[in-house]
Amino acid sequence: MSDDQLKMELPPRPELFDFHGISMTKYVTATWERVQNFKARPDDILIATYPKAGTTWVSYILDLLYFGQTSPDRLTSIPINKRVPYLETTDGYIDTGIDLVENLPTSPRIIKTHLPVQFIPKSFWEQTCKVIYLARNAKDNVVSNFHFGRMIMIRPDPGDWNSYLHKFMAGKVIYGSWYDHVNGWWKKKETYSNLHYMFYEDITEDGARELDKLCSFLGLSPSLEEKKQITDEVQFDNMKHNNMVNYSTSPWMDFNISAFMRKGKVGDWKNHFTVAQNEEFDEDYKRKMKDPTLQFRTEI
Ligand code: PPS
Image 1: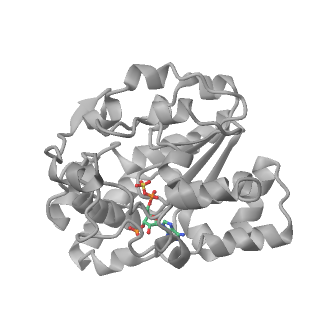
Image 2: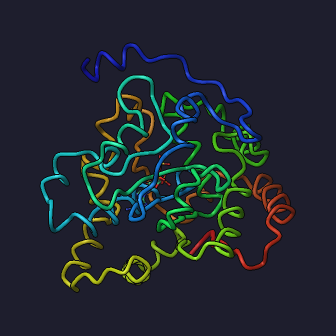
C-alpha cells in the first residue's frame, strides 16, 4: 500500500483511556503482553523519554556512535524509527515496535520507549542494560506535544492550546503526567546505577560536552574527528533536512499542519503561554515538583 493510499484510509483519532493509572491509547497498549515479556539482552540500550523531549535527537546520536562508521549505508537508507524502534507502539498497519525490535540485526540494539519507569519490561533491569533518560523542561515539552498532536493522526486531537495546556497539567495526555514521568525516572537513579539522565537544555547549550558525558557512560572513545562529525550531523538544521530522521516517510503525520523537526529551541514556550497561563502553570509546578535535586531550565 502506498503512503498516499494509507493517508486516505486514516482511521479516526484514538481515544485516551486510563491504563493502570496512566492515560494511554490503543496504539501503545495493543502489544502490552509482548512488551512486558520482552527478553532484553545485556547489551541492549534503552532510550526513555516523555514524548517530545528530543528522543530522535539522542536516538540519532547513539545510532551514529555505534554504526556511523561501520554501516554508513543504513544512515541513508533506513529511517530512524526502524533503526531505533519504538518498543510499545503499533500503528495497526505497518510498524509494530516489538516486531521491529525483535528483528533488529544490530548489536547492540538501540530501543526507544516513552513508558513511565514503572512500566519498563523487567528484563531490562534484570540484564542491567544501559538506560538513557532524556528530559526536557515542561513548558517547551508541552508546546512541542501540542503541535505534534495536531499533526500526528494516531494521537488524540489536542484541541485548542489552552485546553491542551490544562490537560497536560492534569496528566490527561498520552503517557500521563510529565511531572510523574520525569520524577519517577529521576528516583530510579538512586537504585539503578546504569542510568544516564540527560537534559535537552544541556545538549542545546553544549552538544560536545554532553556527547563526552554520554560516551563516558557508554564506555566509548570515538576520535575527535568522529565526535565533530556527529555533533555537526545532529545539528537541528541538518536533521530537519535529513529524510531518514525527519519522519517525512511517516504516513501518519500531516506536514502541512506542522513539521516533526519543528523549532528545536529552548524557550519557544514564550511564544505560546499568556502571562496568566504562565502564572497558573508556575503555581501548579511548584506544588508538583518538590524534589530540589531535580531542576529544569526554561531558558539558557
Ligand atoms: S517523539 O515523537 O516523542 O519521539 O519526538 P522527540 O524526538 O522526542 O521530540 C521532537 C522534538 O525534539 C526536537 N529536536 C531537536 N531539537 C534540537 N536539535 C535537534 N537536533 C533536534 N532533533 C529533534 C524537535 O524539533 C521537536 O521539538 P519542537 O520543540 O517541537 O521543535
